[in-house]
Length: 267
Image 1 (cartoon, one colour):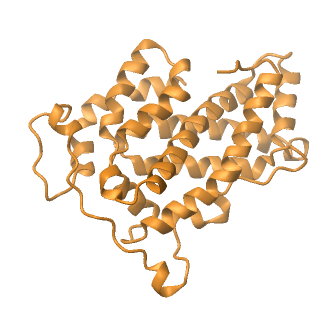
Image 2: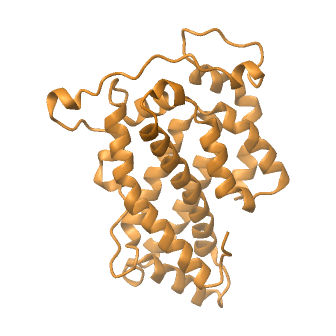
Image 3: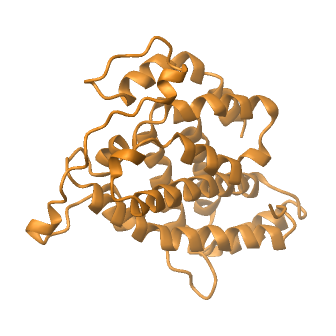
C-alpha cells in the first residue's frame, strides 16, 4: 500500500504524456487536459468488423493464454501457484491502462511478489491459498504477517480490477453502437467506489479522481489486449468475459475467507 501511495503522487506530473497516448491522433489537443473539453472528448471511429466471423479461427489475445486464467477451485480451495500467475497477468494488464495507472500496477505486482516469496519458501505446505494464509497466521500469532498483509491488499486490488473489467464488458454488450461508449472514465470511477475507495485516505481519493481522466479509450485498451492487432474488439471482449468467471470465483472465495478469519470487514 505504501508503494501505491508514493507512486500515486507522481500521477500529476505524467498528465500530459498520458493524454497524448490516450487521445485520437486526428483530434486537436484541448487547451487543458482536465478541462471540460477533455471530459467531453468523444469523437471516435466506428468499431472495425470482427475477422473471426470470416475466418472461423480464434486469434490470439492477451487473455487467450492459459497461464493468465484464474484456476478452478479444488473443493472450495484456491490453487496457489496458478492464482499467483493469474494475478501477475492482471498486474501486467493494468499497464494497458496507461502511465497514470502505474501506481496500481506497481501495488499489485509488489503484493504478488510478497505472496510468491512466501509460497516458494515451502511450496509443499501451501498448495492452496488457504494453506498459505493459515500458515502465515500461525507463524505470527494470529496477526497479519507479511504474506497475509500483501494478500489483503492484493485482494483489494483484484476487487477493483474485477469490477472494472466486468463493467467494461457489460457496457460493450449493452450498446450496439460501440462508438458511443468508448470512454472508460466513469467505469474506473464506479469500480473504484465499489472497491478501493473505502480503504484509501483523503489524499489517495483526491488523486484517484485525476487518474480516472487519464484512462485511455476502450478501443485503445482492446487493441493492446489484441496484442496490437486491429479489428478484434469482439474477440477481446469474449476472451475477457471468459476470463471473468474464475476471476470472480477466486476473488469471492478469498474475500469470504478473509472475512471468516476476521482479517477484513464486509463492505
